[in-house]
Image 1: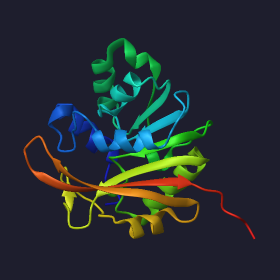
Image 2: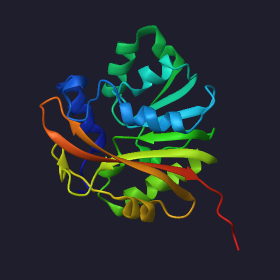
Image 3: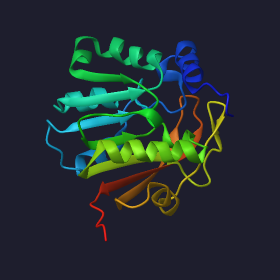
Length: 211
């Protein structure tokens, strides 16, 4: 799929569908919010929601008083949907239109949340670029929450192949510098009333001792 245009593909998805109609939509991202609360962040800590363009997670974080939130998505249409939904509150959010595999950021984050992207990276090189961006952007002592399709769950989403993960497989992709803190499972009910198996993983970014 070397000629596959990811940006055009996702832009078309969000131009053709309402954000509430996509299969991964959640009106209340309960498990994500529970895991984030366990990270004991200060309200001023830097947070990034990767692939969260049209997700309502940002709405809930703003309601809880978080003041440094970035939302990254490859689709400008997805980001625009959230800005419209939030109205004036959108001014408090850093909206980033970018491919995560080429993303760079000057300030390091305390929390990196991804419920939308990593399982779509079927190419090993794309996964390596993702992890490089992650390691550059997440501070030591920071928290990583990745949500993926679980082993035994869907093999495709939005017409694209995905990669299923368990904790061991995901840890191998992340490499050194991440300690698994907890994992959760979820039977997500899509807007079309289909059941999808998701797995949630929370890691802590740890210092790697160099010999």
